[in-house]
Length: 327
Ligand SMILES: [Ca+2]
Image 1: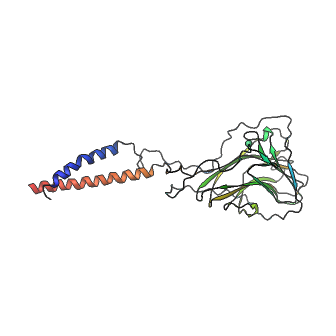
Image 2: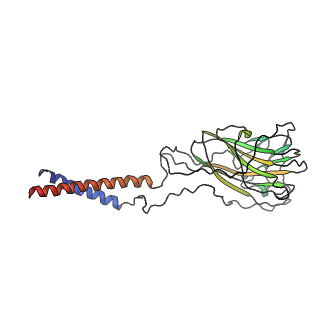
Image 3: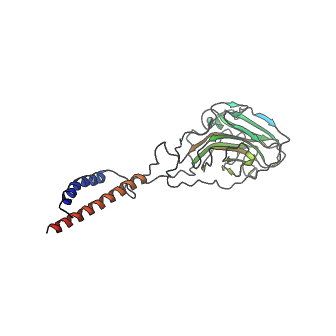
């Protein structure tokens, strides 16, 4: 070590100290520090009703006029409904490869306030499996509207065979690998008036075609939303609310919602109401920004701080060596 080393080292020291002090003075979210913990608790939270509960209108009769479609020669049911729990998407650490995803509503007319065509909400399509009579309508009875002034009404009657389905679906643009939160609200009404009386004969389920297809019978898994039926003319109703998440696997995903009449009871009538259906990205990141977990910034500054310490140690050793050399 020569005598020229010392001025260089001493010249660097103040700068390094200033940098270290500046880093220490900043409120930097180091890992394990005082920054807020990541909050990835988006899965399977039942949304509390925000809209006022259905009122008690009179007279207690629905005012909708369903569009009837009789299809006596429909194919035999091939779907095997299951009531297995909904697969909940896993929420891991943010990935640098995660695409920018808008958290705006993916569905069109999910609240059914944007009009109907032939009884089906604009943006949605209808389906059924025949061998019964089916109807869709613009529900405007306040007791059966969750938000706004309209809801989607669907019904089945004159069913002489098992497992009749009536439903709606919509295909939306999605981002592969991103989790989406599905929310819906609704009511099931029947002649029998209760799940016990009908032997759980009427259910609402949802399913997804992860490739954006329109064939409801190609859906691999249907999930029950857990709502039990209520009397046809109760006057006021308790809305069911349901929230879950699933992960998109392609750029196009189709959401199916169906009402299910299990038993061949021709004299039994079932009416399904669905409203405020929502599908939003639940793990997306605003464009150009990583999720704010504090992890990335903390690691960067921690690495910088350790680098500065190494430089200081090295300079100190050089000073000691220089002093020994002078002696
Ligand atoms: Ca509505």
